[in-house]
Length: 359
Image (cartoon, one colour):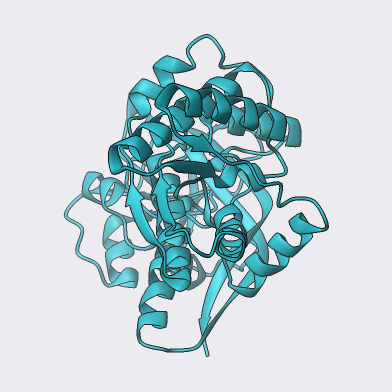
């Protein structure tokens, strides 16, 4: 039996139920989800599915990440709601590729872990699966493992085995609408030009779950806990001196009351130069290198290849900033002596992130 897998939270429970109900069937997992965006999220979900299948002793095949074809398939349906026409096209495409793969492999039965997702329509999935089963001359099974407290059992099992719990279906358009409804920033789609890993980003989660894999391989105990914290994202930072753009690096948690300010340097305390408005501060690249023990040759190199986020937070502390200081701090090669203009578009917001603790 070929089992299309969407994510570990759905598959881990579903596969165990299939193992119990179909003991004579050899189950093979098929991870085919080109709807998942961005690719880092796709990779993270695949990583956790690999772990789940390893625990359960199930072979796993990875399908092609052909997101361009998926985007073309749902063109014109970008604003459809959850469980709407876009979802139908998405299910049909993934089911068709799964049915085709099952036929190629000589399997006579296929199914999908999407059937256990509480956000999906069971009737919609059944209809898509039956139509494709007839087309490829194989059988589609649609067991309802949600009933009889199945969803609650699934959540308990996911928690017990520390599975990665995503909070959106994976679709770019569904994510955007969900975050708009929640009035939250869709920070899953933020990737800084520097490549610096941001707090509670998908890339940070990948680091955690890859480390978890390493610890389990070595039988080292660990615990993944959740932590509430103040998150921050910078969408634009610009410095002009006498209307000329000057390279500047904005340290983490730099914010303004608005998005724009202007002024001039008023005084200097311990190599921190204070502007006369909006609590803005400047340090030189030389001071940055001294305190961080780095050797950046110029600001451009710093902008595109900054150190780890946590290292820059420690730098703020060395500059005398308290943990709850949100002043904008700019790193420049030389301190401006003329009129300064700053554009800083950033957001701070309450968030929750996972932290891995080695026991």
